[in-house]
Length: 347
Image (cartoon, rainbow, N blue to C red):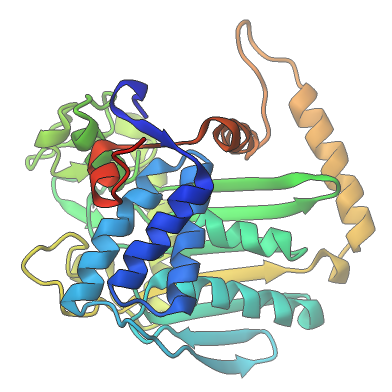
């Protein structure tokens, strides 16, 4: 985030302001705690597009009625290793954390478990929930489909959502191995962040209404799939994985059928989003100890692999852990629009 246009706020202060804003909007304590936790995860680890800047949007949706202020989650256990959580149209973070918790609980018995979510809403950064799985001792996977904003390979209109895929695995004595990636070139929220900051986008990641690549965030109508002009078919196919698991398998909303997340004309109609989570307990496979030893050997080799001049080989998650360490000390950077909404002028 551009340091010239941001302010830095201590995490504890930021968490307090976010929770207070959601509470004022009427969110229940359980659901606002989950949303605050997920947004702070994103802001702490440098995923600013899905961090606390979304607080204002969620408050608007709570006020408009799209989001249930006091959702009552229902868990339907389908089998020994599968379940579906009904999110009751509340904040998606609440249902998502609960779904991963249930998946880990079942995986401790069955070895592997999958939990879907229906009647949910935007869940922020999918990585927050994969990481929760790793922190519980499991390999965690999280995904969701979202409203259409990404062109197909060689496409000239929106089709898939940004549809993230997130994975995390526990590592003895270290931070988890951690991947959180959109299947688009970037998330649409990052375009909105660039608009707020008044900065240009890199080339080849977004397009105008005709599908022509642009760098001015004000001209962006759609994103391009991961892989760019030559290999975007890979990102478009991976986006379909999220749609298959989160929408088709859950019987929820397809990307092309969503009410747009930022539809200012309709803030009252629930969007019936679906999510999908999976947990794998290493103890039921190679064994917890052997798995941990394998992860340590793998990561030692990965981080020690030769790098090209001026480069550095890193494990997935290393960048995020480094940013988190820096932000604990220096504070979390907040864009001007979010600072105004959260009343952070004193910083």
